[in-house]
Length: 409
Ligand SMILES: Cc1ncc(COP(=O)(O)O)c(C=O)c1O
Image 1 (cartoon, rainbow, N blue to C red):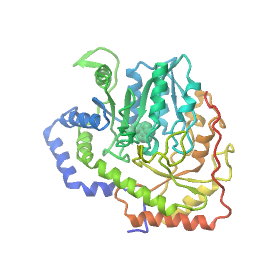
Image 2: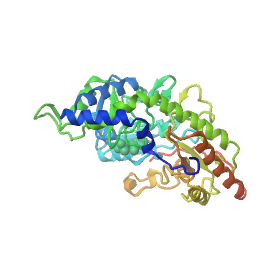
Image 3: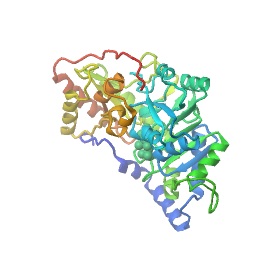
Image 4: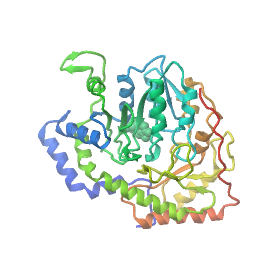
């Protein structure tokens, strides 16, 4: 069916593995083993291996993974963590919930990931960690990030919620930081049937502490060495993920195929910029041989007339969304408001105009349907809808480079 393309279709994936999935869920139900059973343990081992780390610690969701990663490094009040304002709120929420201060730096305009060139200027004696996000499934430029961290004695926590299965210079995302955090939220490339998350690390001491913190600070039952929480990965969710994991590589490959198809059919479309496989500071699209993008999202830019002007409004994007909706095509803005201007993060003290690239992208990004079950015909239909609408709208703005002024807080 090519004339209705929802932004997501989780049922379609379920139907491809229904028999296996239902048999495994039933097995767990019948076993009576619902907490930290064999599926959690084997999933921890397999995800750690996939991410090139020694240990996996299953937790309740990706947000807790970030929170516990900061916690096990004793990051808290008085400390600062450098990250991006152009990410899902959980990245920054975790820092703030620990009582630490998020310090934003702007992103690179082609990769949408943090610009390592801006990190050093944001470092202060209070800086404890850098938290890069592999946004939309494209790895951040980890070599310069890790090099700066090493030189300044900082920790690196990868937010790998959107990047599972991606590689950077042959290394899996999750293998380069001190710790990496993954979300198995149902819409992720590897999604549970509910909430779930994991932290991976190769540091035995951190792994051991994380296992205690996720279960009320217990190393031995009912002996609470320190404060902790209840944030265990659910056995049923681990079973679901164990069924799905063997398919991840082929699902990610299919996403990449669909992304290429979108890009081919959207090339030259006025007013639209297609995503590129890029590393911060390099020319757009030059990282294809070095980096494997897993396209958690396929995100285009709908250029706005405002250029770098201080607004988040983009009538051109609104019109395109409405046109797509009329054609039964789903689309979504991830994320329409950068975090430095969100009410919840006002204590950070940043304001509109401080991070021009993040602001511009918030105004222009639009994610299109992207899941392995999409057909080529559906992708071509979506691209055709965009092309025919954009051909009708008046003079298109041009993608001008955005200056990368220092943007720390
Ligand atoms: C970049 C990023 N970080 C963190 C999270 C938080 O994960 P969860 O929703 O599992 O708490 C998400 C997912 O929603 C995410 O996309």
